[in-house]
Amino acid sequence: MERGFSQQDFNVFSIEGLDERMEGIRSLIQPKFHAIGEKIVPYLSQQLGQEMYLHVAKHARRSVNPPKDTWMAVSPNKRGYKKLPHFQVGLWGDNLFIWLAYIYELPNKTDIAKTFIENVDHVVSHFPKDGWISTDHMKNEAKKISEMNDADVLHAFERFQNIKKAELLIGKRFNANAPIVSNPDVLIQEIKDTYDSLIPLFRESLFLQEK
Image (tube, rainbow, N blue to C red; front, top):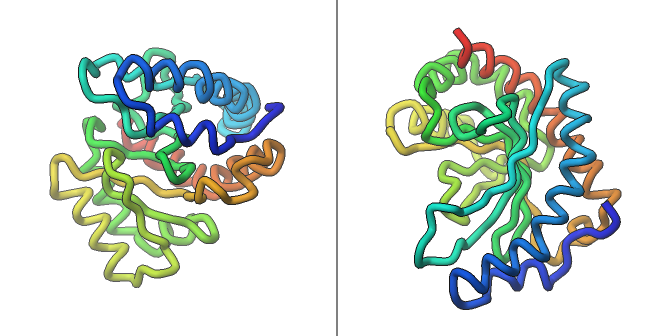
């Protein structure tokens, strides 16, 4: 990855019109996702001992409203990622995110949530330092884990279990103007470090997914 993300990349989300914004995403942001993928996909494949695959969001279902965010995902399935636990890197207009993502399409997310609730201390022990939690990948909202107490974390897990559309995303967020975002080498290392913390949870939840 030769260049990190610049303010120009984040400004894409201010472009009016679906076609115009998608052109900005394709020309400015997606090449950087592919460059990140060239570093991260082989790394995760090696760490996990299984083939992992890059998926770059196409936003193909959109016909009117331009996307407010965009992302790349890394999954053990070549055909898709939404029905599996997966890793994400992406941008909103004001931040970059690095997630282990469990989104609402997961067919057995209640089983994963139940396991997380029953083993909450174990799960929390794998949260990345200075980490964040989001409960909806479609909203630019997340909480710092350091500002959550045990009850808050448990509530996020229970919501994930009990509400059909509820999700769980664990990882990190950085403001668009944070130096790490524009420094490619440091950013790649941060992505690896974040995923290293979360790999045990990914392994365990993938096992539950395959049962």
